[in-house]
Image 1: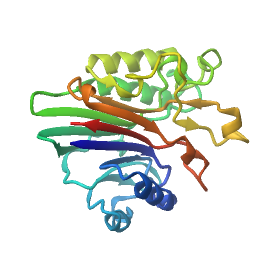
Image 2: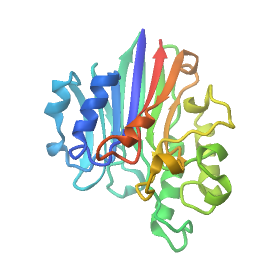
Image 3: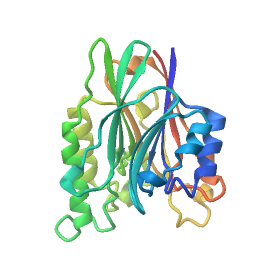
Length: 267
C-alpha cells in the first residue's frame, strides 16, 4: 500500500487557498499538514477541502496568528492539541491515521520563529523557542508491530551545515545558531526520530524549503534554509519511497515563503 504525507507552512490558508487547491489537485497526498493557518476554527475553509475529497479534518486555529490543520482523504482520529509552554498558542496537534494494518500517530508542529536576536536573556521570543524545543523532548517516536509515528511541520530550525545557504554567515542568525541546532538534534535523536529528508540525501547536498520574501529574486540568489521537516519512527524508514520538495511552488502567484514537502511510503 502506498501512502503519502505532505507538510506546508501556508502563511494564511484563506489567503492562499487557490494555491492549496492547485497543490492538492496536482499532487493528491493522502494527508496534508498545514502550519500558520492564521484563522479560527469556525473560519477554516473546510468546505473547499471537502470538495476536493479531503473530508477528514483536524483543526487548531486562532485569529491572525499561528494555527495548524491536518486534512486527509482517509479517516482521522484526533489525539491531542497540546499547549506548549502554556502560552495558549495553536502550534501542535496529533491525529491517528489507519494505514496498511498500522495505526500511524501523526504530529503536526509549528515551532516559534524566535525573533531576530539570538539571546534568550534579552529576547523573550527566543527564550520561548528554546523552551518549546525542550518541551518537545516529551514527543517520542512511539512504535510497535502495529503502530508507527510521524512528525512533520515548520520547525523553524535548519540544523545541519548544508541546510542553509551559508553555514558561516548564518551561525549568529536565528534558526541556525548553535544553541538551537544542538538542542534540536539532541531532541530528535533522544526521541529516536529518523530525519527522513536526509535519509537518502548526501550530507553535502543543500536542501532548502524556505526562501525569504526579502530577496528581490529568490530563485537567483537561492539563499534558502531547510526549516520544514519530516521525521518518522524507525519502523517506517525502510518503507520510505521518496521525498519531494516542491521548489516551484515558491514561484507561484502570491506564494508562501515555504514550499510543500511530500513524503511517500510503501507500507
